[in-house]
Each structure stands twice: as structure tokens, then as C-alpha cells.
Image 1 (tube, rainbow, N blue to C red):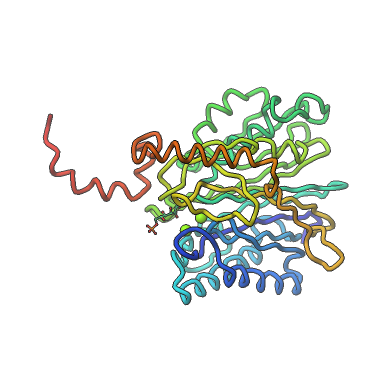
Image 2 (cartoon, rainbow, N blue to C red):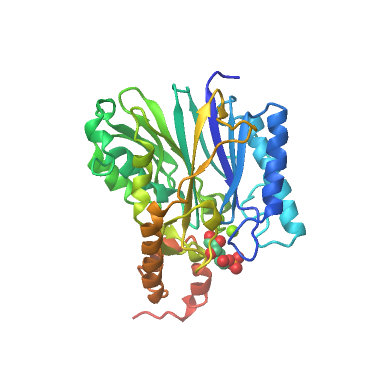
Amino acid sequence: MSKKTTISVIKCDVGSLAGHHTVPKPLLDIGEKYLKKAQESKLINSHYVFHAGDDLELLMVHTRGESNRDVHKLAWDIFQEAAKKAKDLKLYGAGQDILKTAFSGNIRGMGPGVAEMEIEERGSDPIVVFAADKTEPGAFNYPMFRIFADPTSTAGLVIDANMIGGFKFEVFDTVENKKVVLKCPDEMYELIALIGTPGRNVVSRVWRARDDLICAATSTTRLALIAGKYVGKDDPVSIVRAQHGLPALGEVLVPFMHSYFVEGWMRGSHWGPLMPVGLKNSKCTAFDGPPRIVALGFQVAHGKIASDDDGAPMISDLFDDPAFDLARREAVEYAAALRRMGEFEPARLSAEVMEYTTLPKVLEKLKARFKPA
Ligand code: F6R
Ligand code: MG
Ligand code: MG
């Protein structure tokens, strides 16, 4: 066991109540029951179970490092058990993201999404976990850029000497399975050139340039590429570290004061406005959306989530706040404008992206009817 602390967020769509919109209590209870046991047996030190739309989210803090077989197996077993329950209850899409049958040591590449970060705890270590539904990992590209590279958003890039050296971004090309590291501000234009294509290039990690301190980690699953067919979007999770020479909590959150557009929404086939919401509104309804994001803030202390006197982890539901009302209203307005366009681009995703959806099957039967023009 290492002296470092690991934050693991592992998520899976195991089935939903009434369509693809929310995770009902019996499934959350399974997550809670198993993680409580794992905490008692000291496999993990802290946990928090929540959901982002139809995705069951397991937040675990431990000292076993990233890609730990036992921690991944724990998440895998929970998802199996929850999918079984979902099947018994005839919930919708039961077991949807479980793409492989046998666990082979690491949950990556088996369907569930994973964001993990091993840190050496600083004097005080504020953490934000983001989880979004009805979108994909590239949805974090724009806010990651604003948080760690845009001096018009993060004041600290200009007025905190500890950040003047900038940040390094790892960009993962999900199609060719390659990655590259770019340093900002020096290579900011090249970074934007890459991550402006969020459907393909995903910001997977961020470090502070002057000392390589890890600052952010995002899930990079591409379900369609694992399964070879459309199986729903890869609803993403991300872990961001804040304060004391890193962007302040408020600088991490300020990009979400406005809604912005992400790929996903209905049938994973549309551009939709991302709506920041508190956990009570973490459900995807209108046109299976609009795509939603929740943010949880906590402190990591002595290998755990800092807890209250009763031992309950202290978690702040960051978007449950009127400061994000404008973004929510914008999201509803943008959503209505896009839906007026129906299935015409740019409301619907581009033809190239639709190759990974169910559309090709519809067009198949027209093939023989095309004649040379
Ligand atoms: C998107 C999503 C939903 C479904 C839609 C159709 O990720 O999960 O928008 O694509 O509800 O679902 P089926 O084909 O299961 O009826
Ligand atoms: Mg689903
Ligand atoms: Mg989902």
C-alpha cells in the first residue's frame, strides 16, 4: 500500500427507472451496501454513492493506487449486482454499459467509465468531482481549457506567481488510441486546435507545469469502439484539484455560469446545451436531457474524505446554487431553439459522427435504390 491517496470515481449505466433518466434507490442501495463493507474491511477508506442521470457513480478514496485490481473488482461486482437487480425489476437498459462478461484485472475497457488520481496530500486538498449524463468525455475539454489555460477565466493564471508557469494537458486521441502532452501558454493554439474536436480528442490529464503536480483526470471510455456498435454515450466523470497554487474552487466552477454545447442528448445523436444541476435535479427528462452535470466538492484528509463527527463524508453539492440559475435558464432556451430544428444539422450531429449511432441501419435499405446521377 502506498502512502499516497487515491481518488477513484468509477461509473456505469446499469439500468434506469422509466427510460434512461435516473438511477432508482434499490441500485444506489447496492452501491452503498458494498462500499460500506469494503470500508469496514479496509479495502477503501471512504466512499460516496450518487448518480448522474442514469449513471450509477461510485466515489472511493483509498491508498491502493490507480488501476488497483481489488478496487476495480469491487466496482465491477457492484455493477454486476446492480444490473442483476435492474433485470429483476425489469428496469430499462438493465446492464447497458457492462460490455464484457469476465473481469480481467482492470475495469477500463469493459464498459464502465473511470477517472482516477493518485496524489500526495497537500496541507489541505480541496477536490471537485464532476459527473455528466447524456454526453461524452470531450464535454470537459472546454471547461478544462477555461480552468487551466484561460487567463480571462482563471484570475490566478495572471495574479498568482505559483501558476505563472502554466499547465500541461494530456490529450487522448480516442480514435487512434494515442496521446500527446501540450504545455500552456506556450502551445495554447495547438491545444485548442486539438481539443476543439471533443468527439475525438479528450483532455485526459492536467499537471502544473513547474512541478508536474497532478491537477485533473478525466474518463476516456469510448463504448462504441469497445462494443463495435452504438451502445449509448460515454457519460463522463472528472476529478479536479483546487486552491493554493492551483485554480481556486470558484475558478474551477466559473466556466459553468454559462451553458455550452456538448455532443450527446437524445440517442447520443444531437448537440445539446449542458445544464449544471444539484443532485436533486440529476435526471435527464426533456428529449432525454438536456445533458446534465453535477459537481461535488470535498476535502481529502489522511487518505479519506474528511467526515463529520458521525463519520459521514462531508460533501458539498456545488451546483445546487442560484449562482448557476442563469446557465440553467440558458440551457432551457438553447434546448428549445435546437429542438425547433428537428433532425436537421447542426441540431443533429454531423453525418460522420452518426456512423457510430443507429442511423446507418435506417439508411441501409435505401442503398440499392440509389442510381448514378
Ligand atoms: C442516450 C440515451 C437515450 C436513448 C433513447 C432511446 O445516451 O440513453 O437518449 O438513446 O432513450 O433508447 P432506446 O433505443 O433504448 O429506446
Ligand atoms: Mg442509459
Ligand atoms: Mg447515462
